[in-house]
Length: 115
Length: 109
Image (cartoon, rainbow over all chains, first blue to last red; front, side, top):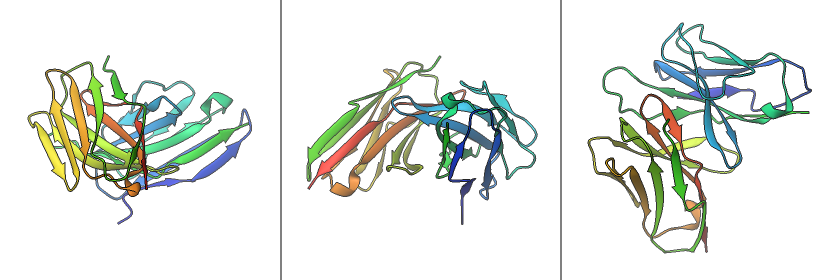
């Protein structure tokens, strides 16, 4: 049971390049999330998707786009990477049907460096 | 806007000690609070989830309490071991998840 799988695990980009971070889940959860984690700042929500076909902005959406094409997959795209986007990116899932008292589950993260 | 803080930011204790990590939040309108463990270079592992109607949850040597009215939660770790060394984060779930910055714990052999 893989849970939440993120690819790639590491990536180095040059300023201005674009790339897509992929996230796939086999937990059949409705909601999926993208966070970034920076030293001393905890996790900050970039975008989330409450269900297939819907997406919403989180706390720090600027410079990112997302796509939720099906229930399993939620991708995060950097159109023109900037050094300020150097971070560790985490994807998470959450079951939101019924009572909202289920734990969040995380992938292992993508470590992204932008030069 | 919900804000979550954690005290202390870092903690170093000798093996065998009991310890308490603190989490505070500003908006008591939450569904639940979750404690996570994060090892260096790894993702987050869920430790305990306390529903808003609960006062505490226990798992092995871990006990988490929740006082929603005062906006506080504590994570109690009994008989600490070097393997407990990690960063511990709390997150509250209301309109969305909001995370604290974490407490970095070192348990010395």
